[in-house]
Image (tube, rainbow, N blue to C red; front, side, top):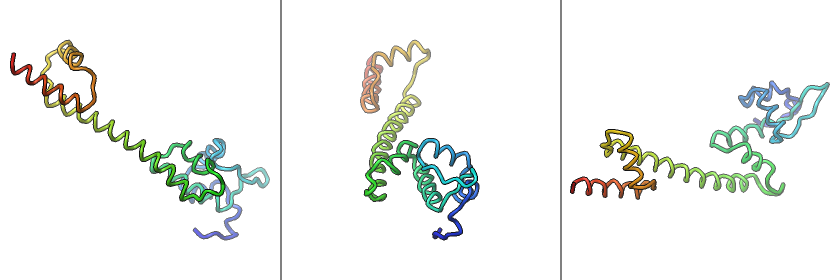
Amino acid sequence: MPYNTAMAQLTISEVARQVGLRPSAIRYYEQEKILPPPRRISGQRRYDVSAVYQLAVLRRAQEVGFTLEEIRQLFSGFRKSTPLSTRWRTIAKRKQTELDAQIARIQSMKDVLERLQACCQCDTVYQCGAGILSHGFSNADSGARSIRKRRRLDAHE
């Protein structure tokens, strides 16, 4: 969307329509100091095209999972001289590390669920609880070892 002077005095409804947000969301971002307060003309908010562009960046950041605090950092958590591309890379690297940890946690949960479906032979909560306590609360790898060990023990009984 190229800049032109006809867009220099957009209402909140016009901005909201262009970026696919509700006006209340834009007011919220202003209240949270993610967006700067707009100029007012006769008490009404008036925006220039930079607000549209900033909201487009904000929406993309939300789409990839950034929190409002991370978005605030993207907009104002660096020196003004820091290019946006450097800001994106810095924050994206942190987010990717966080996502990798979440993926590992989810994979571990999935592994436990698969082991439960394949290996659980318990008839009662008592048996299940006793088995959990005797084998410990461990991660996916040691949990798999515990199941193999339990199978060997069960085979010898």
